[in-house]
Image (cartoon, rainbow, N blue to C red; front, side):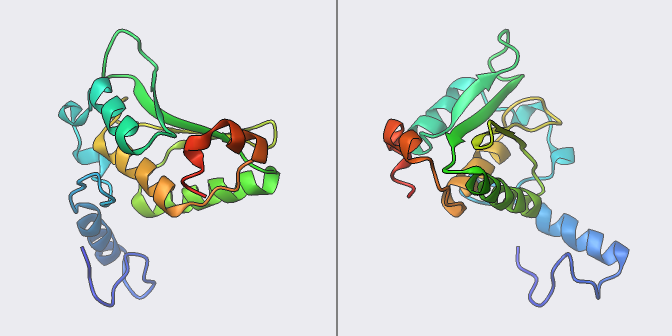
Length: 167
């Protein structure tokens, strides 16, 4: 959705107009190929993806991501997707998180970021309102992969050859 000359954050717009523009822009459908996320409040459980489908999408085009299950009894509820890496140093880890955070804010879809041992990063994505993985999550992960250049630890990179395609 493009509104020439307008941004939903334009200070010249008043509150209600700004909210209408944001809502209209956010309602653009998401085909998983980089489209804006569908607002969570408009999603129901029919948007949950089966873990097998998620695995298939990740393995074919996003090898750095994996499926995690919070609830082993269900193939869709409680699932999330995650990606772990070791950055070259603390600043590189923060830079990657900040870049991903800007994308998440732009898309209105917010993952969980974990920074441990000063440079080990984990990103966990799921649709909080559904408690599982939706196409929004796959799209956001793809945006992170396409738009963020991570400066990896050389040792980690040697052990994870699938990440070399990114650099």
